[in-house]
Length: 299
Image: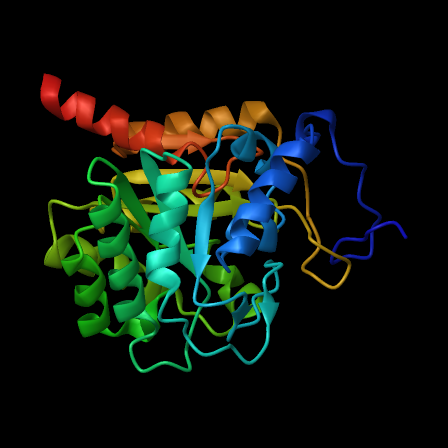
């Protein structure tokens, strides 16, 4: 069945620049390790287009606290269902996987756990600490939910001293009620600003998608709002519709327009920007961290 946008018009075929090679051997090998350690990767659950490339380089973003989310965002391929009990061995298992993969940088993300009083903050902090204890030279990035605006929960995560604290804005303000009905635009901005307020030395990061029906003006307003929080790193990506039940792709944005948005974001003052159709929040995350630290040393 051909996909239609919100106006009922048939969408064009996916352009060539969105087609990627799939390394089945690398994916199978990583999947085997994750199964042995009872772990999930957001790469698989969210159907990331870079999965084959990242797995080939022995990198992955660990998704903790199960594979079922308490929210039902219309762009996301992660299942919305009643979550499982937290696994007390999960922090140790993530640390073991990071060590086996000999990672120098790892990203740890989570499903949203509104069923937990702290949103899973203590479990996230325990995982960060376990990874750092097992791999002393590793750098760690966390990608957290909005924790329902719980400042104490956010402080718990930050006290584990991740190198990068990431919380994604996902889209422009006007689309929140349609695409992220259980989230709040201002609340997500506050997660970023509070992170800088509570732990100014920890880099903050966010990302959003385009191609959902937003205007250029709205995108630049989002950039301004994010920059006002003190956010350091920005990622911009093409929205890809996971299934016919998800929000339709309004348009496929050209690589040239992504380049233009990157230039605009850098001119506005972001320290590091990754803007490309196939970019995802944790894609080549170590490069951003390395670049910012190198610039800090040279300045």
